[in-house]
Length: 300
Image 1 (cartoon, rainbow, N blue to C red):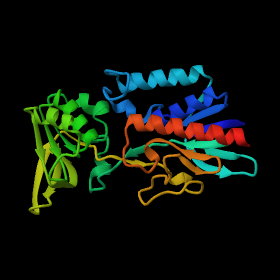
Image 2 (tube, one colour):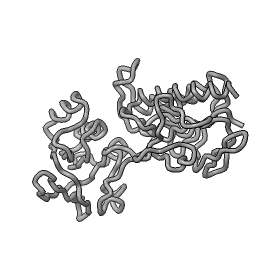
Image 3 (cartoon, rainbow, N blue to C red):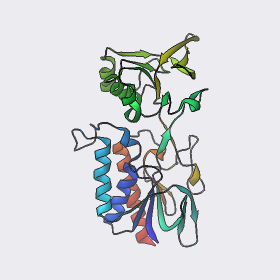
């Protein structure tokens, strides 16, 4: 039996594992896809204390190596359910089940969809959710980025280094990204920003056509590009755990800064309901959740 099962192998989950391991707890980390999560898409991280610049992949590699050296078990397996037994919890996965005394939910989220006609049909072939993953295929091509937050603007900047033209489509009258990122983006001569505009549908007819509408003027338009990169945030993947953790209207785990969901159940990272989602806040949550789990374990 494990002392702690961590669901999710991103910065929050790996940090939680690290703290639990250093308290001599037996720890399992479950990650359904690739250890690292969303941070793997970051070409460079420049706002994490102690690092002038580090890639997301290198950041995760160091953290994963550290966790493994402390003795964590790491499995690529999807957690489907958490069952509360009389003397333990059981994490049911796609491959089996694991008994544990505590669970830390650090499941992160998935890219949020536009949910417009044509999107699912073109996903992976004209619609992408990861500029780092797919941007190289569109060198010297025209592309669009949907969104105006930090993720969208960062992706647009990265794409502008290799693409002929980048059109950013933002539904607000202004960008919401950090001012420093906005300045970099708007200084690029091959970048155009369209404000107050949403995507109504996408289709392929040779090039990919994104049908737009200006919400302020109710005016339709269209842009023709090789790929539409969607960067409008992520959605939590917590539905499977609603029997042990209260979810808010948006599907995030409704837990406070103490990261406690219930008896022996904790949450950390982007799947927790909060205002700020950065790698620093994810690792902070991982620390808090792990220490809470350790206190719980030491009390039973």
